[in-house]
Image (tube, rainbow, N blue to C red; front, side, top):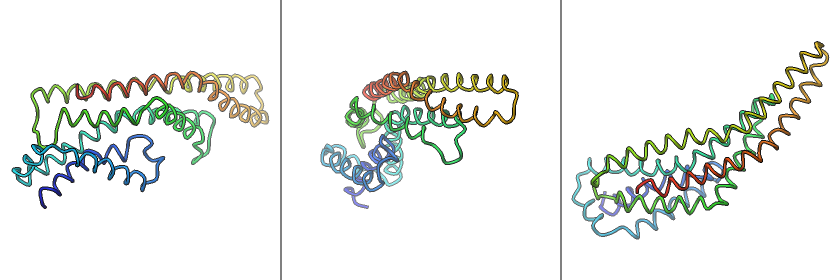
Length: 242
């Protein structure tokens, strides 16, 4: 391939994971994500410094392939950090679906919590933070620039920060777990008190209604937790390559 094609491939390798996985992710049609990836790649490629193109030109093909892998890893890190809070919010909704005894394929609460997280993400400027993180990554780790001094420390910092974000994002599920647990305890106590098999159906119906109501109440606390976690993720994106 020509040097120009290699340069395009390297740009796409870093941009593609962000365009495909970062919020809204699967909620956007594939054609939209592809178009976003192509548009971002064109912007980045047009701003590539001549030094990067020259360094690509003098590389061997194996070195270029290794660089493609590095570029994809950098883009994946940004995408994962941006996506974790939304994924954890959806997982919290799935827990609530299980608590209300939803049938297979019934993921209404999971969709509700995911949409809520996406609204918060866009409301606090998430896409702009992702774009800044991408720009900062090129400043810290330019294409063809090799590993800068302290690159090992940067990678270690990113890995630790991402792990901390995953752990912190689990708090998104706490409000729904607590409300679901309270409803389960109440339903179990009601069953025990009734002692009647025939009384189970009304109790189970009331339990399902109570779980849905609990999700609404839990959403008040969860929205605050969610906003905090997404803000933390956005702050982390700005510090990834510092």
